[in-house]
Image (cartoon, rainbow, N blue to C red; front, side, top):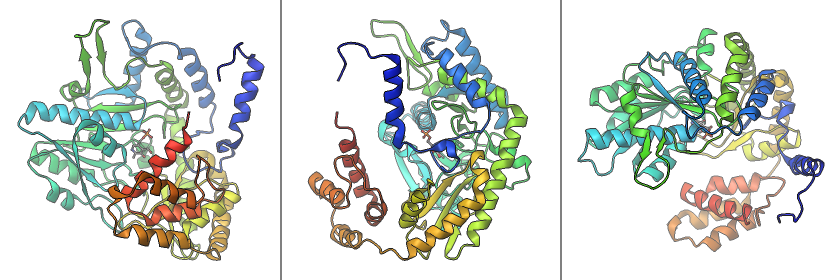
Length: 477
Ligand SMILES: Cc1ncc(COP(=O)(O)O)c(C=O)c1O
């Protein structure tokens, strides 16, 4: 409720601090997800500059020339990381999802110009492509055509992509690296297919676009994925991930200015000010762009080189250590710092609860196609000091989880819904199913294994229904 009289500063700060009590303790370095902490004073400089630009409005770069200058300089730094020539142009966005939406919008606009007879353009997605592409498909009326990936490496399969290309295809996609398994797709082969057909090719380098060049310098072998590859027409690169900038910072880089025109929106028909937006947002805080510029300059080449070195050592330590734990294995061969750990001995969902009880955060991933259920790690430099302790607790968690039962309810629910059309299942049934697992009224059980085992047993369409149901319960205001 809005208070009648404004609350004091002390009261407000104490209240929000109390609200944070149950948040992930990312500063501990024991969190493997959601937060990218460089463990460097650059973060403080970023926060300071963010706050100082909070009120400036990116809506009109002629009123705030500082923001235009900052964006141009950030894009120039990023373009060099992905070996783009002077013709490459970029746009600052609020995150990977927005950059991907713009890449798909650019492809749709390109299709309207170059394939005017196409009613529904298609893009071909390896099943490892990020969910943001499906969101873009949904929002923009582009059809997502999914293709399997290699069942061992989890890399995109160019032959499967080739087979899925039709006369309606306008965009091919690969990741550098993929989120789920942290592997870099064979972008060269994918882009060659695109060039052969005269269509577009997007590299989703939201995770690796900024930092992978320093991994390459460390001698890590990986396929080329950037503008050095003929046929790559756009690249998404998140700065709020492994460039360690505050959230709300990503880029879409286009091979040439003509392609970018297709994601720019202008409107002069309404009665107010003339609108021209390069991205989805119109009014937008100058904070993220100014802070990104500040963090990148504060870290510099040497800072990122040191961070990459720490992350690489930490990732190798974890990958090698997992191989020594009985029954556990790493899926694929991650080239950067995202690692998926599967278990043939214990439920990974019990393991995730056990790790939580030991003050770690690891992210459970459901099984999909050839990828079994697993625990996902997003590794950063502040995790590096914990490698041995993490591995010891991972082994202990696997032991403890081995003794815990699989959910009988999950098996029963899977059987009940196996033959049903997900669309025919009423909302109440979906809510009841979540409730039976203890997820009710926006609350979650302290141990999540049963909820995760149930989700793991359901077809994706029903999981999506359950997630939407749960979100509705979380946000009731
Ligand atoms: C490969 C990849 N692409 C896109 C995204 C979406 O980024 P965001 O969460 O910033 O919208 C992510 C997020 O993890 C990702 O890993």
